[in-house]
Length: 240
Ligand SMILES: [Mg+2]
Image (cartoon, rainbow, N blue to C red; front, side, top):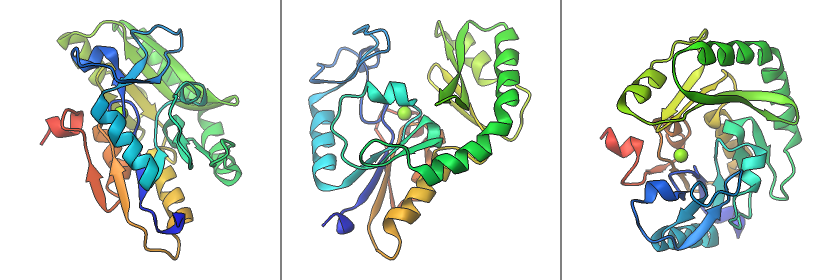
């Protein structure tokens, strides 16, 4: 019975799979996602162990991806998820048939629509800084959801500069990990979406919940679950 299966909320990139560059030469057992430009060096893969872990979770639990990937980037993930999905850093919840969950989409439209100008200001400020990044606003069906900066070249200095990039907002969630800085508006985010979905799927039930993630910012939703699971090589593990 699905009603008794554990609910597993799992980040994708660097938790379930990663790009080849981050595999340190380990054998790629299975391709998990295709890069936007189809470049195999930037596509994502799983080791044999990661593939076994995915099959175990997907076969025995209700496995729910919780990812920063936009709808477009999520559509390039080639894994047979069967349940709900949280994408765009929580701005969109997909139902098991892949369609947006309308109540959440309406709530996010109300929350995020007034912030489009602020996102543009964040983007402009970041682009004026002397850091070599590519940057954009992640949009879903024309709705601006969050701002993303990625380093073009990873060095200790560029990482430090990106982590400390001054931006014209103070109460937004800053996700910083590896070459990425994301600015996520208040009221949105993975934690808000997971809390909502947890309430929807576990109401009146006593299903065990597990939270998988690699980034410190993932702790925001992982700590709302019963058990936290982290890759042994991850930003979270590195701080322990
Ligand atoms: Mg991750």
